Image 1 (cartoon, rainbow, N blue to C red):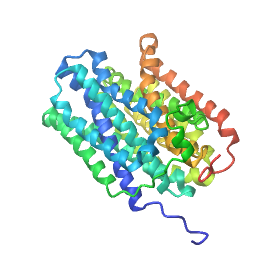
Image 2: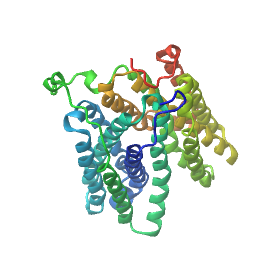
Image 3: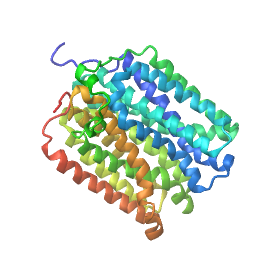
Length: 400
């Protein structure tokens, strides 16, 4: 390899892993968008119960992330993916057969558990495929699968439900899960056999087996950024509809997704070449400005600008934070580091609307989004104190 050449990133296995994650995220986001309305219509659930029908998925994903990092290599990565994707697909097919709200919640938790396993296992596998010198770039492109899923899922679910029965929404998500399953079968996954010492201690669970403490500082930053994202997905539609700007809500999420897509095409390369401080603080600042703009926006162009800044912020920060976290751990603990990162994002999405929702009663939606902007500013401070001030080099390939 010449001094100017770069190791290959866009390999067959990389694209197969991308397909697996894309299918999983389309299912996740489609049903998160559709489930509250479905529960309200099918089971006459009130607002709280309908919301829980959507968010209970995250409970399953979050709980399994606490243990899958430790046990993934005991079960085998490919075997785990095949089993969990099968459960993921079958769960979608079961929804139309359910005639009791409690059973619906149980299926949501089961499917969420499968999703937590899938996203952790496939990301742990793709990290072995990405050259260490191009890690942030590779994770940035790879995370476009989640971005595309967030763009495709809600739009498709709404369109299908408008022209066909609810059952076809579930059929669509089952097909997407099936495509992910088909992509795993030819995927060459590097297995990491546990050492004799790890095998001997397999039933001993300590805090370090669930959470990688070296990753925790940047995982907290990811948690805070996810709170901001959750305030958009949960409260922006009713806020804008209440202000007579219903069309702006749809436009916001389209622009947000496009901005995330755009920034992830180059932010990873900047990270790998110039270091994480060239990306993360500025991305978090853009996200804070996005939330503040939504609080004061009184015109469509300000909503569009806020969406652009939010997409740039979320799209730039999250993959870079994941790359930093992986760089702070060792190769054998990558599954635990990966689950720590995803757990922080799940927790932020689950906790944010509940923890800050009371602000709507106190100060209205503008007050809510100003508090959200303050949370993102705090995340910059946390990042700088726990990692950023010590980061003097690109993180690709570094472990320590």
